[in-house]
Image (cartoon, rainbow, N blue to C red):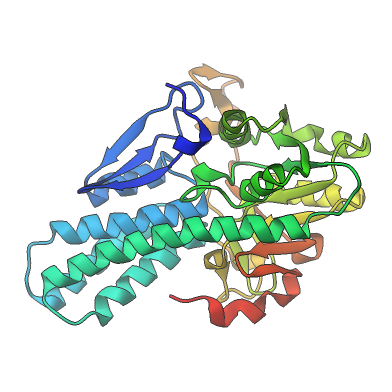
Length: 353
């Protein structure tokens, strides 16, 4: 099944359930998964049916409501205690993406501060999840506009390199890094996207390239180890990536391979931007050394599809993320504007939870 970009709504609340695009099946198959309970949502997050920090946050918010809906007690204290147990199950799915924790914290704070019977609390939780969903979509559009202003002003159209997927699929729609790219395309300032394939899960090849094709944005896929060569050949004007967690000093965790991309961008004097909503900034962590890095199943490294590509007996290391130091980042693009990494603390008071 094919779809145009206008149909790419990765998360939809429909009547009494959540509809998720199954990103594990793209680009070969466009499939929608129905999520009716919090256990299914936790599994969808863990198995990467839904992925991308903002999308995970929105999904977790709906997941907590689905869990709340299942609770039978009318006792407020017991309800909140059971809801916290559900929240902990959802928190345990992906340790690095801070939007997951931010959304759950916001939902739990709402539950604790809402006065009224349990059924009223459940209704308020659903409305809060819908608000988080709508806010993320608007946030991404704002990031796109601020990113457009931050991109280099050159006589020719821009050639932008991105890594992993920070597009509509990774958010409530539109995207963060790809949102900037999308805004540049709409403004007539983009010549081409260069998309890293992003080993080992190939999100760039499977998801970012797919999104660009749907919208008709010119896209060239390269393997991760071609980025430096492309820069040296003068093919890249800017790098824009997303983030799963940014610390108070501006260090940014993103998909593995982002750090090396930032190093080679600096070596070639190419601006390197991180695009992320304010909810991705973890002001409780002083620097990137404190970010927990998820390690995933080694099968992702030694197997492609059903084919094993390495000899038996080899050992594996499969961190899903790395941390790019603030000094390698030209600017962090948020819904409130673009700032140097060392200046993001000015936005701390704007981060509502």
